[in-house]
Image: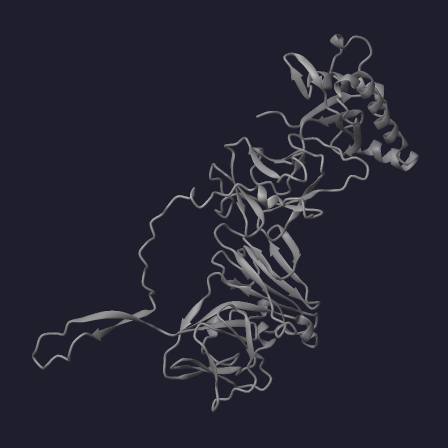
Length: 520
């Protein structure tokens, strides 16, 4: 693997603001006790033919002790830092002018807390770039471990061709926050200009698997060694590159991902469908009924589905409607089985809504403000969707959190049941019926989250011959009919037990925090 970033420590310098003391030792370099900046640039050319250097590096970052940089800013408003950068650029231009090939010489001086007084470090190389004054950002790079909390790594400029992202800033251009792979490998971004897609590669090539998720808009990077974290989940890093100024001619970074074509994907055998365990088998007679004492009939058995109700999604309420109750924050965590539970150590991701109706995603990496619609992949193989509400629901709800593994309960036919805070039927699906989800203002007694928007007797339901029969039992209960794709159909406000509302099988009903799917 080539050296993309050259990071060297020059050691002790009498005056860290003396350009000549940093550039070259007095006398013959052959007898110098340590190489200084000029010697390093001469020994590490950017391009060479045979043993002859034909081009040198021209962008250099200089790190000085932070305390000395702070003192200069306080006493001279940074004049010594500016003079140092200008002095080194002049020496660079003087000694290597024939190897620049028209490149601008740029120096950037920063402070570093880790350096002792008199110590100086330098950084240059193929993946070190210093933007020109006024140069606009082309891309912004961010990373995440859970797809919810994203942390900015760096900006990429139009003329910045190579960027190396890794464990720390010694071996890479930038360190990725939360880099999970230790000192192993790095990610290389190749930018060949606005007319070419940004390429994402890994170095060394056998260190990671890098795949593009077109639906989510980011790369997933995993170690090929099968390393896992403390919870047993595979180590991974998600990398997102966002164009700063989308234009009609620029191609988005997503176009650079080399996703396998349909022809290249391996064919797989489709497993035989497994019958639903909730299907019961009843005989369908193929002939006349048997006569007493006769042979048993030739009958086949066909599965008959049992009716059931599933919790397809959670409707996140607008808490601003309930300020008089003292409700301040509603927090919902999802464990590794993606079952809603109170936010805790076993939650892989959580969602919160406050009394300002602002949404947040919560993960072990922190909190991040979000807006619907959005999607998340806190673990491999599972995607969470946060859907925006239809306008008819928007005055009560912020978003719909779709559950990837909806819990369901069977419903016996031929009877009418009631759903609500005081009804035992489907109580196992009322997963927010606990004060652990709701944080109230000081002095307000704890209460169940179900008290926000769900009546004691909200509605009744009964399986009908061509769907479900829904009756609204409380005059204050808001009920909404959504189709099989969670699109708004109607508001249910006039249905009564005598004249129920017909809900087609597979459609949804919103009551309180719950989006229930009524299956045939």
